Image (cartoon, rainbow, N blue to C red; front, side, top):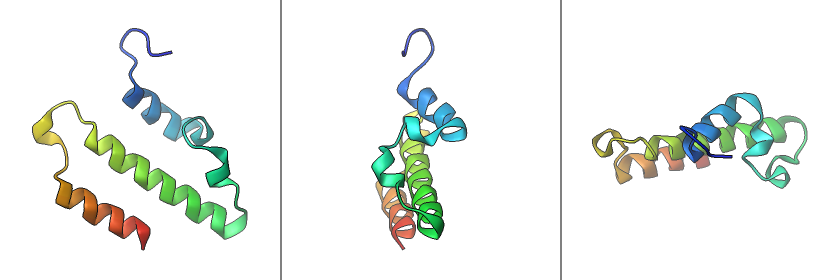
Amino acid sequence: MFAGERSLTSWVKESISSSLNQVVDTNLLSTIGKEHFAAKNCVLSILEVGLECCVELPNERLHMKEIVTKLKKIKV
């Protein structure tokens, strides 16, 4: 699955834009209506923060204070 240049990070990036269900447990997205939309946005935001933490160059990665701030905003 991760042969060649493909990595977990690249797979998540691709899956976010095509099929979120491949990355996230479907039970997390099993809500309906407005709650489903909010849950999906929350999950997408968390995945984006995770991807920002996985940038190849260490000096380009987020600092822990920035990560905590972003996660608190997502929670609200």
